[in-house]
Image 1 (cartoon, rainbow, N blue to C red):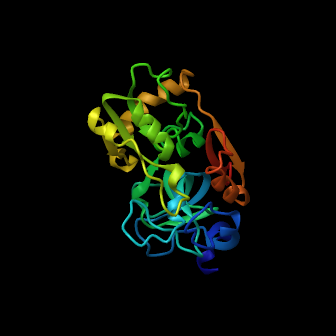
Image 2 (cartoon, helix red, strand yellow):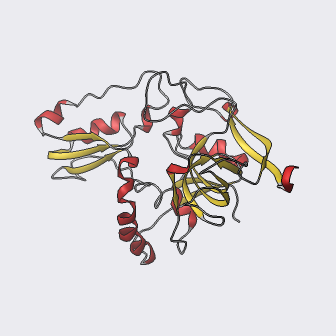
Image 3 (tube, rainbow, N blue to C red):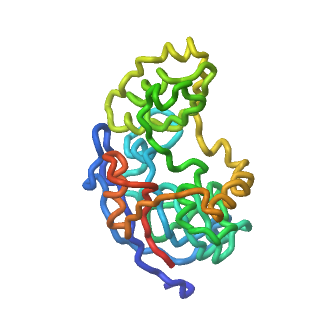
Length: 280
C-alpha cells in the first residue's frame, strides 16, 4: 500500500433499483462491503475523511429513491452507490482548514462506515459534546425533528389553529385547513403521506386559505442555517434542564438501516429514527 496508509473494509448501503411508486422494499437496497483508504488522497484539497457514527432516517429520502427527471429540492440517489443523508461523524483526516482530525461533525454524509467528503460545505462542526451526539441527527441537527401528530377537530382547537408545521399532507392537511384561524400560518416542510403515491392525492379544502386569509409557505431548513448558533443558544439550556423530552428509535448496525428507513412509512418507529453505525 502506497505510503503505508491503512486500507479498511467499508460496509455500505447501496440503492439497487429506483422505486417509482408504492412503498420501497428492503430488496431495493443492498448492504455491500468495499474498502477505503483512511486518508484523503494526495493532492485533494478541502476534503475530509470521516468515520460515520450515527445516520438519520428521514422521509425526504423516499423522493431520492426515484429517478427525478425535473429539478427538485433534492437529487436522486445513484443506483449502485451508497445512499446519503444527514448523520454524525468523526473526522479521521482532513485537508480542509475548517476541520481537523478528531472533530465531530454533523451534516450530509454517506450511508457507509467511512466517507470521503470532497465538498464539506454542508457539514457543521459540533462544538457542544456534553449532550448526546445522537441528538445531532434530529433535534440539534435540523432544528425541527419530532412532531406530535394530533387528531384535529374543533374540540382540540376551539378557537382554531394559529400555526401549523406541515409534514404530512393529504387528509391531515385537509383537516387542518378546516380548523385554521383567520390569518393563521402554515409552514409546509414535507408531505410524507404522498411520497409513495404515483399520483398524489388532491387537497379539497383549499378555499379556506382564501376565506381565512391563511398564509401557506414552503419551508426548507437549509434556508435558515445562518440562525443555527442562535438556535443552539436557545435549545441547549432546555435540554440540560430537562424541559425537552426527546425520544429516539435506534437501529443498531448498517444491516438494519434499510428496514429502519422503510419503517418510517408504516409507522414502525416511535420517536426519531436513527441508525448506529459505530459508537466509537
